[in-house]
Image 1: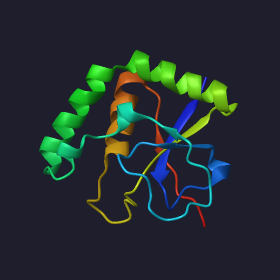
Image 2: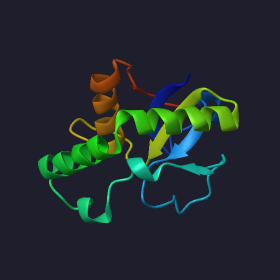
Image 3: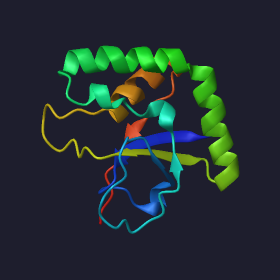
Image 4: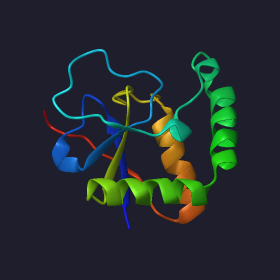
Length: 127
């Protein structure tokens, strides 16, 4: 089995688990950890990036429904086995530090909890 968490690239610390990229782009700064795994199924499309929140959310949730819980469970389990770590941390750029900040990783987290009953907590790592 596996556990899922989310955080930003800047807040991630390898003690949290295995880093998984969920953003279209890769960070353009040097990371102090490996970022070898990406999940394209969780990446928003480029067309979504400039949409207002409501429209973005509608499209992203439709994307998740098309991918499906079963497929994602299989992907997460395969990653956990491959890296010998059950702690999977989904990363993107947004810090979510300010009220009203949002990002797709938290949309995924809310969707996943509704679909599976498993919470996906946001992690804040000290650098």
